[in-house]
Image 1 (cartoon, rainbow, N blue to C red):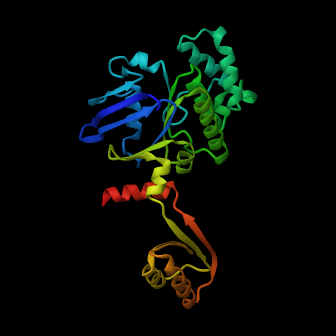
Image 2 (tube, rainbow, N blue to C red):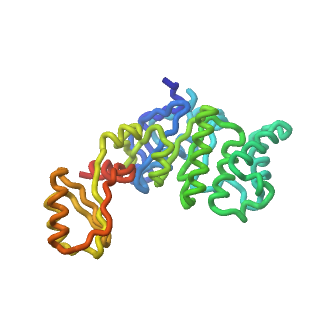
Image 3 (tube, rainbow, N blue to C red):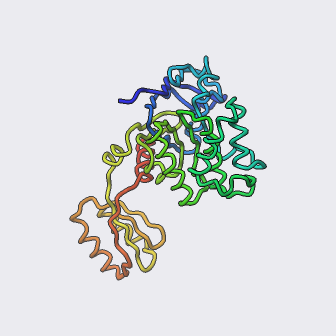
Length: 310
C-alpha cells in the first residue's frame, strides 16, 4: 500500500452564510490520481485552494507529506504544483521557454542546472517548435500545455489541476492525459484533478470523490462505481419525433426519455424487449437505429447526485 501524502480532516470553509466545505475528510495516496467531481459550487476549487493554502479554512486540518498547511505552508508548497482556473499561471507576453526560465528562477533554481529540464518539458509536451513564440499567440490547448510545463518545472511530487481540459479539443485533452499518466507511472507523481469532463476523469483517475454542497457523498474507485451503478439501456433513433402518447406507452415497460427523435429506454426486464418492438410497430413509426448502451461515468455521476437529493 502506498503511503498517504495528503490528509484532509474535518475541513470546514464558510463564506458569510455559505458553507462551501462542510466537515470534509479524505486521504490521497502517493502515486495515485484522484478525481474530484461535483456540480458547480459544490466546493471543488475551494478544497484545492485550501490544500495549497491560498485560502484560509475555518476548521479542520490539512497535512501534505506530514506537514501542516497552516503551520508550514512555505515548506508544503515546495513540493506542490498547481494549475487553477485555466492557464492563469503563465505570462502570455513571454514565450514557453521564457516562462519556464522565469518560474524556475523565482523558485531559486540555478539556471545552469535547469536548461535540461526545460528542454525535456518542451519536448515531452510538444512545445519545442513554438518554444520561443509568445504564448498569447497560442490556442487554448497550447496555453494549457505551457501552464502544465510551468507547474512541473521545479519537479514537484504533487500536482493539483482545476479543470485542466476545460474548453480543449479531444486531441489536446488526450495529449495531456497521456502525459500525466506517463509522469505518474515513471516518476511516481501524485495528482488531484477537478473536472466536468467525465471521459477524461474516467480514463485517468484511480479513485473519485463526488461532492455536493461541500460534503463527500461518494468515495470509490472508478471500477467499483461502475460495478455498483452498472446499467444497460437501449437507444432508439426514430424517423420522426414520437408523440407523448407513444412515450407514455413505452413507459409502462421501463423508464423512458426522449431528445427529438432519439429515445432512451431502460427496460425493467429483458422480456420487455419484444413488447417494445411491438409498440413501435403498432405506432407505425419507422426505427432508423437501435443500440444497446452501457451507462457511462456521466450517467453514474448524475445518478449519485439524484439519489442524494431524494
